Image 1 (cartoon, helix red, strand yellow):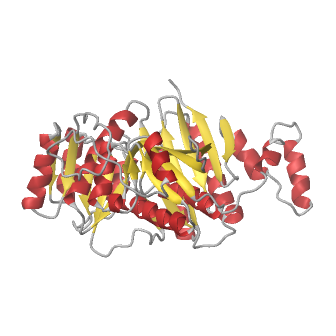
Image 2 (cartoon, helix red, strand yellow):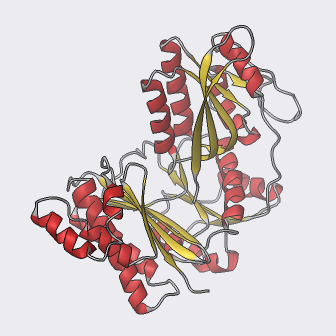
Image 3 (cartoon, helix red, strand yellow):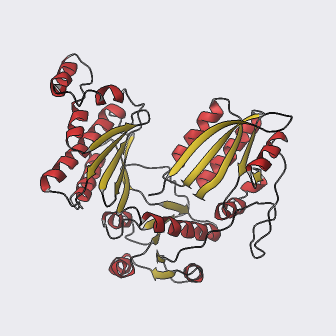
Length: 424
């Protein structure tokens, strides 16, 4: 599962002219799953009057087109407010993506933080210079990028509508980078061959008939759940239009797209999967709205995942009860029973534990108070008394606590983390 860590540091430029600015350090993937966090973090800074921003991108391993659009938008907002918005220490593959999409003609890019401060003092004007280390690169000599790490060998399965130049170009690109590529033009062929291939990455063109539920079937299978899935959506698809129930892919492209973006995304995902396989055994992210049919689909998938865990039947039943209670709280209390609001579940298994993160779109609550009550001997009676008084009793939290090995709320309280230890 891709992740994104964001940290902030208030600094002042060095030298005679001291200008305060915020250094935003990014580490991970700015993709479909993590973009909302990236966007909300920058929105809080800009709306809070922080208009001098330097984004340290040294740890960014991938950014999608939505993330790039966000960077341009926040750059314009900072400039309109009299500030400056810059990028620094951009990794090579990310820098190429930015250049291909025209970001570097709008947003200044610095090779290091010292140069970024210099550009900041100049009002964010000017463009840093590239070291020119790759003569074959199509990146203009105005984009400073860091060295490209070696691509690990991997296998890629591609489900594309038909044979042709596009299919062959994709296959040759993967093979030229030391990987193995397997082309399929029907869902049945991919399903029959996936066990033998054990792909690290699966590229699925949604125009192929029968591909609608392919992401779910891949992610539900523990043998293939860590494989990254990239969906190619048809022209005009709205990726923000999410209704009903959905098992999330790892990232998406909408036709038409630059072929170079697909190559960069493919290589980035192969790197990420190679790391994830050392840490996890299964990762699934699914989301559903607050109508009963969608909730039932989400709980059914959660139950199917839990049923495959190396636990006793009673432990699996207890864990499923914890999940159902977490979803019920998210729908009723967090989302206030509004059917258009969504619940997102991140399900992660490693050799020692299973973790379920249940997230709603609400404003959170005073979770520390209720968590502080669950260890008391009379916790159940106290919860009943609070309910009689017309308040939120906390019985659901008590149930989740007793059905798991670890329970905690994150952030403002709209994400609950449920953990259960697994047998060795």
